[in-house]
Length: 190
Image (cartoon, rainbow, N blue to C red; front, side, top):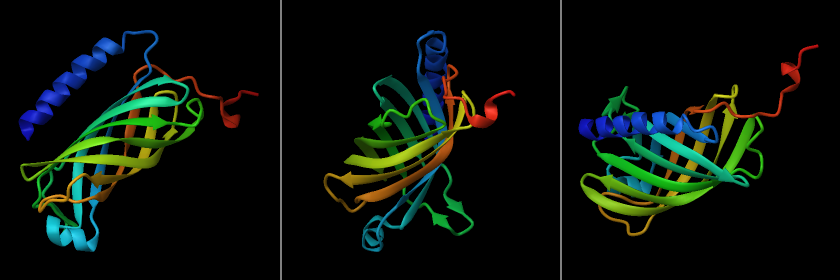
C-alpha cells in the first residue's frame, strides 16, 4: 500500500506543477478523510459496518457550465481508531466522476450533484460500482475550501467481500490558481 501512495504523490506533485503554470487552469486538489458505511445486513457479509479511510486524495478540473470532472484515490491506512473503526478489511477505491454545481461555481458555498464509477479493491477482490450523491465546498478564500460529500456506491455484483454502501468524506481543497469569487458583504472596504 505504501508504494501506491508514493507513486500517487509523485504523480500528483509533478502533474500539479505542470498544470499550475497554465494561466487558464481551473484545477483543484484535495485531501480528506472518509468512511464507508454498510447496512447491518451487509456488515455481516463484508465483516464490519464502518471502514475508515485516510487519506482520500482527489484532483478536479472545472470545464464549463457548472461541469467538473473529479478523480479520487482512497484507501485505509489506519487499522483501528479507539474502538470506533476496526478495519480488518483492505479497502482501496479509485473513483472517476462528474460534478454539476448548478451555476454556483463563483459563490463561496458551492453545492453539487455527483455521478460516476468506482473500482473498489476489498481484500484483493475487485468490484465495480456506480456512484451518485451530493456534496458541497465552502470556499474560505480564493484558494482554500472545506469539502463535504456523501456518495452511494452501488456495487454491480455483491460478493462476500463487498456490497453497496454509503461513503462520507470531509476534507480540505486547494485551488491551484486563485478562484474568482463573488465578493462577500464583509469583504468590502468602506
